[in-house]
Image (cartoon, rainbow, N blue to C red; front, side):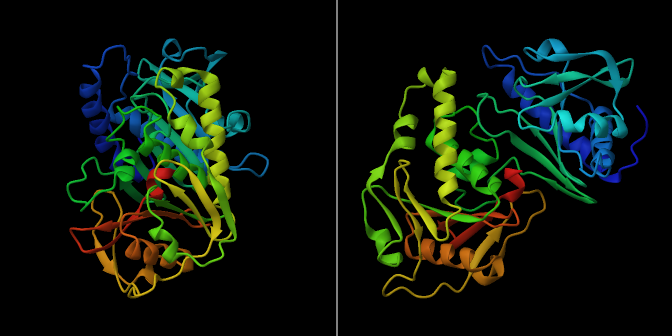
Length: 379
């Protein structure tokens, strides 16, 4: 394998290799799991280097959007195998990118005699399989499949040009870390995909994907106190509360193995996330019952206007800062922060049109609203 010409690949490869080795130790004790082989530092560097340079090329005016998976064909379920191996080169990736850029398709990468090659494509990867996703020119994400097999992959590192972000594996430095953030970090990967928190992860990813921006307010199911923070009449109230997603989540784990059930759950998540694109906030209980969408947020009667929030990003080296909520984003972010300030048993998920994503939750330790910037976890 040649020396990397992309400096960030060298910078991040050792930390990524350590992450995968640490998680491999934890998987060895899991019955019935057959994790993917783990790449060494040099292999990780070479794959990232090829992906980066490919991202800067164009094929018929389009930049590659591809996913590279490090595994041999025999670990890939029912793979599509090329008759002849292709070298792992940026120009080769550029040429085949138009045929493999749909979601869920991975280009298989393996090695022989210290040479990396492309062997075909697959839709099936084992737990802890090294994945490199090329999103846009200069933007790459290292990730792996969750232990449970379903749901959004766990992000390990984000590379954007010469900027490198390595995702935290510990939450001790994050005060009052919400369960949703813990799941995004992959620290609850042993919970079923039907787990309430993991469904919120899928909703967050879908909200970000529609690209229109949106706000999702999660409120307690047994209280109407949240109505004091909403302008009435609500544009689009739902009566009775829509329980399509809630009913599917309550299905048994055994039924969650059925393909039809998984597809139905995906459709309900897409449906719910789609409503967040409507101007105003979508309101849902923490039991996944839809109460309203297109709702306008207002300061609750007798409440003070929010003056500051603590903001963090769950990456190594990220520092907490206390800022005025207007510095965290636009009107959508400010109104969501005010809602959580007034309704402290609720959380707010806010997606910006530019891809930024924030979880607002009340922090008893800090005595203020905590804005968790998590867009790096949702790529």
